[in-house]
Every structure is written in structure tokens, then in C-alpha cells.
Image 1 (cartoon, protein in one colour):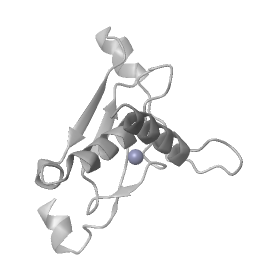
Image 2: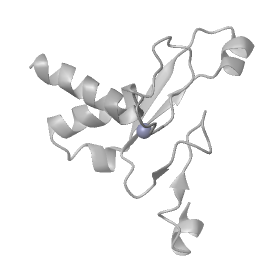
Image 3: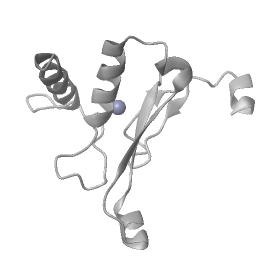
Length: 114
Ligand SMILES: [Zn+2]
């Protein structure tokens, strides 16, 4: 990554493993990301679906607990309700429940439990 940073491309879009063209977040602002175990890996390894949330400790560790929770909830919002191993993209559909609504709902639920 050093070579591309030197060329001033630190802000190039990062892609999501299961939605390379659709899930875009810049490297400069990313503090966490989620990885899903896609169907082909489940079949090849004879494993159940699984997810890993990766945090960038340089950025994540210094945040408040509330900020950390919101970031983790954002990543959790990428997990579909059927827990298939795939990931939901950042879709903004008018008139339909979109990704941001899903994140807000999780944050509300989390705040109620406090
Ligand atoms: Zn996201």
C-alpha cells in the first residue's frame, strides 16, 4: 500500500469482499470492516456461514465507547437477517428501508438497552 499512498491515492475507494463494486468506503475514513464467508467458501470448506469484523486499532482504539458501538453496529447492519454469509451493500432506496435506516434502528435498540 505504500506505493499507492505515495501517489496520493489514499482516498481511493475500498471495496467490500462480497460487493466489490457497490460497498464503497474510503481508506482514509475506514476504522472497521466486515468480512463475510461467501457461499463458495462455505461449500469448499464445509463450514457454516461466518462473519469477521476487523477494526483498525490505530483509529478505533482512541474512540469513545459510543463511537465504537456505532461503528460495530454499522458493520453488523451488513449482515443479512438470514445470516447467509453474504453482505448487504450500502443501498439508498427511496421509499424503502435502506441501509442507513437499518443502522439507525440498531443504534436505537442499543441505546434503549442502556
Ligand atoms: Zn458499511
